Length: 300
Image (cartoon, rainbow, N blue to C red; front, top):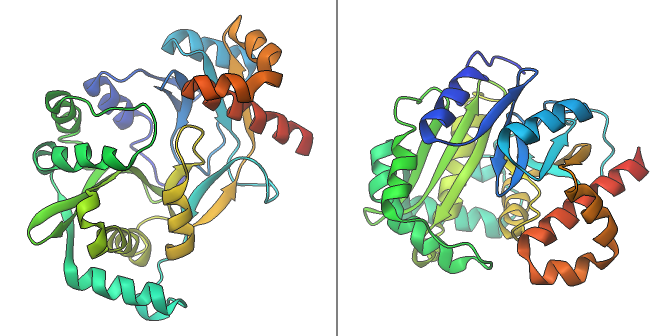
């Protein structure tokens, strides 16, 4: 996985401090996220598991479904699963779209981007976090300020693997990003939140441009990653990054393992997924994952 002395031990120490369920299987981290067990680490890596390994990870973390991916190598484009990554920083003057160049120049006049401390995010970041939910569709609601602050402050002292960035407008925090850094391999833009009131000043343009310049323009990592395609949320942000900043879909293989008897239930009810998925957001996510796995198997 490249120059990654901190993986997996430093990240496991971070998750233990946060109280977040995670386990290591054959040197690779798997985490519980919204009832689903998912790999945690650079998207380019192979997280394939045997059925036995998957069953043990599910038992350890208490999830109902576990997702694995195979990394970027050897998967033809046009599949159903991918990470949205960027490999190259593009200076403003080299951007082909005059509209994007204009917005970025306004962003750089209107905004200031800088690194933040955990305490900065735990304090001023909470208001941005809450206001960001105004733009979401779905059933998620913000956590209480104390839980938010405790989660952020648990990362204090882990500056080697976690970095916070903020964008300021008129001296006020308008957005932030919490990034995981996997050595010289990947910077993962993990938690991105923007106050909708400042988006007209192009705060999102300013933050992404500055972070891409830092990580890619200065050659700190091979690529930055906005995450895998979402089965829970819309892809508006990922579409924006592809359109504006040269992000691309990096296709990977995918597989899923279920706890018994959950897998049998998913397979039996799969023909009714649209009806059931309309009633339950998480059921929709599981059916969409199963659909992607079936498509990958047909492609193999």
